[in-house]
Image 1 (cartoon, rainbow, N blue to C red):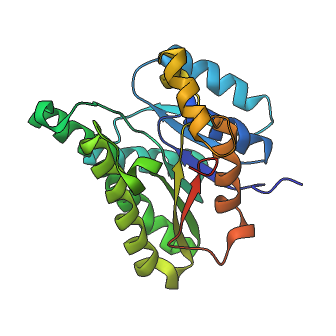
Image 2 (image 1 turned 45 degrees about the vertical axis):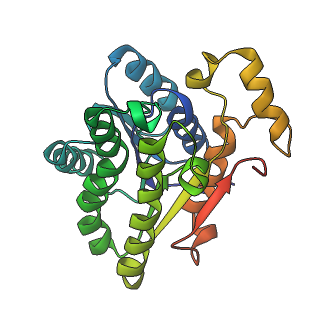
Length: 246
């Protein structure tokens, strides 16, 4: 059964890692997918082709979610091309890790802008069309770090915790219009980003996780399918940890 048949999803930062996993899983469930990328147009074209083999509509947009105007333009373009946006997944994010003593003001501001302000920018851009159609599911990607903090990631943790408060507020404001807003907090997910870590570090991470493995992008994508579909139509304002029990 295809849970997202005839729905259109906009996913930010989808050419690799978790975002790519979400896009790939969504098309298998019948969703049309508009996605953004920041730099590699080759990766975007390859993903577009791959997604379209599932008989759905798919299109990549080069767009900087941290820029307010760019986010508004992006949503206008997607609406023109796809007709509706039923699901928004704010997944774009970066890290600039350092101990607080060494984090520069610029590294703090950039992480907040890319990770948190982008969520404001895009959510603000989609709520009008979603209010008109009286339905919508917004899924914001936080992190286990946003829930419990992490040494060396004060900027990242602040941005990811901010997403949770923002999403809960949106859920309260827009519930009466049948627009749902939820958060997924991934734990240690093994992607291109973690592939550069020393094997020993990765082993320590895995050992500390009750399920004894790192997660996959597909683990996150499956949770997104649930929150995007009508199966979760009575769930809003929630944070779902997908972290193997961390």
